[in-house]
Image 1 (cartoon, rainbow, N blue to C red):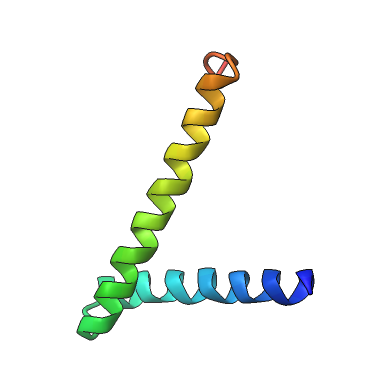
Image 2 (tube, one colour):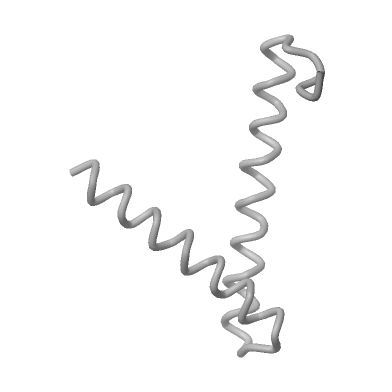
Length: 63
């Protein structure tokens, strides 16, 4: 069951990345919508990682 869920997530990520590339090259309108959703989801993941890191009190991750 977990393998199926992870496979679906992987397919969504790969499809989203493909839409980002296609939209940047002037693809159809629906690819721009999918690309915008993919980029927004990526920003949410990045910001949630920053929030978790600051809550843990780890300080600056660069050194």
